Length: 442
Ligand SMILES: *[C@@H]1O[C@H](CO)[C@@H](O)[C@H](O)[C@H]1NC(C)=O
Ligand SMILES: *[C@@H]1O[C@H](CO)[C@@H](O)[C@H](O)[C@H]1NC(C)=O
View 1 (cartoon, rainbow, N blue to C red):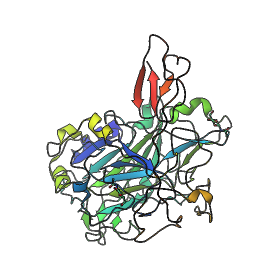
View 2 (tube, protein in one colour; view 1 turned 90 degrees about the horizontal axis):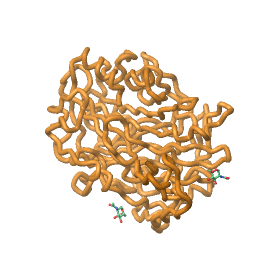
View 3 (cartoon, protein in one colour; view 1 turned 180 degrees about the horizontal axis):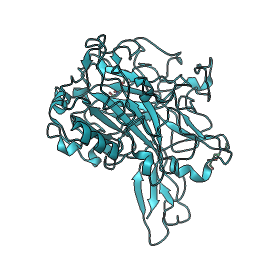
View 4 (cartoon, rainbow, N blue to C red; view 1 turned 90 degrees about the vertical axis):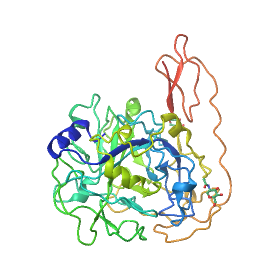
């Protein structure tokens, strides 16, 4: 989480503030990005969480809180969609495999997914304005390959960071996101407790634009400086006059189980992780947001839910659903390609690894950019990045089930998406599903 201790410290100093914090399971992982590339297959892979009305186009005039029939997020009222790039581990033989996303602290047994916060921030219990229907935003830029380290005179430099957890975490988890030892780049070492990616959206809105063509210019960070001990979340500052409306601060935290690659970690000190947009630096991490709360439910939550840890059960305004209900809400990928669970010869799409520091470029005539999908909708609206050509219609088939084999020893892997090894545990232990990608003999 934020770092429980950081939250406690901040709460002690600033009393409390309206906060909700909750897990969301994976809805689907595929090359869709209906904000940047509506109607066509996206250049790179994202993991999407939230309401199941998510699609290759998201018509801003549609009320997706009504068309979605389930959500992967903890609150029944939240049919929003949240998505981010995914992380791959590059094997020394040149193949890539997705790094599984695992539940954060105290979010329950979500299947993959990530954590979402809405925070009213400082001063305590100030009134904030929930986003209206049709509101969308993006933070971060998948093409960048360099950025300043977090520094107090640049609020924005705190917005996207990485936390390298030790195991046990100790002092690698006692600062707010972007503070402490967090880095702007992907950690350049093996993190025995995994890596947490922190994405903090701007909190000040121009009060009128739901979604400009660049998906960003309607939002701004608070003015002023950041106290590294408090981070952006409890920053004391004013919204700029151009963006006067204080909205909840939306935060994503994504936990990657990099620890399971310990034995494969390069001995030469090289960094084997690469984001789905061909980014080995991490500077191109980004988050997308499509508001989809029912009615005034988010406003009511921000007005009334004041548990300092944002515990869902403490928010009586909203309806909490079970892990099982969240995990049941899934979409089948519509893009016909394998993106996770097995070693892949290249990153899906057209994403040659580009180290920077110059911004990445989209290669012309890249065969990987010619996707197939069930995308029957017509491409509309502004296109921000160079685009692959129109997709054709095919449906991806469910993955074959894993074949049997010799018995797996205790604590060995016995299943998960893409697992092709044995699913039979040595006698005296049985196969327990820990998440969609990993089952273990216990
Ligand atoms: C690289 O190693 C992985 C894991 O053993 C394997 O699945 C994959 O096929 C290998 N790739 C190549 C190109 O040999
Ligand atoms: C997504 O859009 C396609 C094409 O418009 C449509 O056929 C499909 O039913 C939609 N899926 C969902 C989940 O709404």
